[in-house]
Amino acid sequence: MATKNPKRHEKENPLFVAPVLCLLAFPVANPARLTSRKADFQKALARWYRAHARALPWREAPSLYKTVVSEFMLQQTQVKTVLPYFARWLGALPDFTALAGAPETRVLKLWEGLGYYSRARNLHKLAQAVAALPTLPQTPEAWRELPGVGPYTAAAITSISFGAPAAVVDGNVVRILARLTADDREFKDGTTAVKAFTTTADALLPAANPGDHNQAMMELGATICLRQNPLCALCPVADFCAARRTGAPERYPRLAPKKIEQVAVTRIWCEQSGRLLLHRADARARRLAHQHELPTAEQLGVTEAAARRGPLLACKKRSITRYRITESIHRLATPPTTLPAGLLWAPFATLDAFTLSGPHRRWITEILAARVPAPALPAQQCLDPRL
Ligand code: SF4
Image 1 (tube, rainbow, N blue to C red):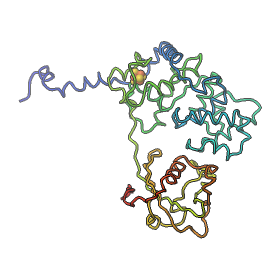
Image 2 (image 1 turned 90 degrees about the vertical axis):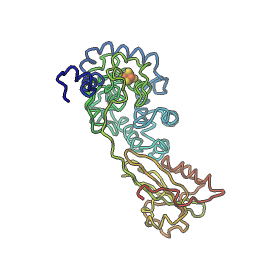
Image 3 (image 1 turned 30 degrees about the vertical axis):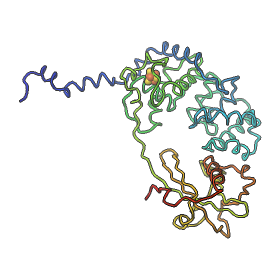
Image 4 (image 1 turned 30 degrees about the horizontal axis):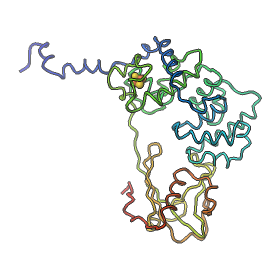
């Protein structure tokens, strides 16, 4: 029987009060509340950064060249992965002039294993462009004219090296700002989210030391405001954070789920007279130009079914962006009589001199190390996601 007393209804029916609780739990995004306190926010962040910034090699005796190299290497790559590459790079190519004059093969060799090789090629071209300029560009707009420099990299380089008033906004900064403002909007992808938070990031940027502020935001995202289990108890800007007050900061930012795609690749292991068959990607390949990899069945001109009849040497899984890739490596006993374009024989004795993509160097090393004794895996151990 329906109650005639609305007050009693509220008390007895928890669904009735749920909207009110929801509003309390997930407050409406309010960037203006944050930016109205920006001076205090900047101070709290700067104080924490001065005390807690990690000692990273590009921050010690900083230079424009170190900043540029580190920003290129850090695109899509974690600091701990970049550290040994950065040290090796600076030792071999200490400045723009050395980099501009280096052959591309050397540049790519130094980058080997870091992935996304277009970054190395762009960095090389950028050094050549900078070396040819009469004066160094100092604004984000001018840097964006250079190879491989997008809005984030331009803002990072010019704010750190020239004090340009340009806020960096990447996934880390989006996460921090979405949480600080408890922004409940769903974004269709990272790019859309970056655009949505640029105004707030710009509004929080101080006129003095914008580079330090940007680095502090990056540092906060990398060490405190983590994607999972953010360390709110240690956070220098917790007092400004609306998401923390909801008790569910990990809820932010809200990104539409990615459509995951399963891909299967059949690769060939073929050797002859102490040489291994490799495929060299041509210069137009966006991700892997001039990198060597084990050839696919298609590159070798054999059907997948025929390739899969050979013994299975390894089955590898990896993810690249939204793709979940299963790669099975099969031995081909009889080498082709003529090699299709892009294929070449690489002597095992000089394999180190070839620029191999990171996963393929690991896989080749593993297969070579494991082959005495060399039992092939039964074919069913490699589960093809399409089956
Ligand atoms: S309080 Fe927590 S959620 Fe908010 S910014 Fe700090 S670490 Fe991130």
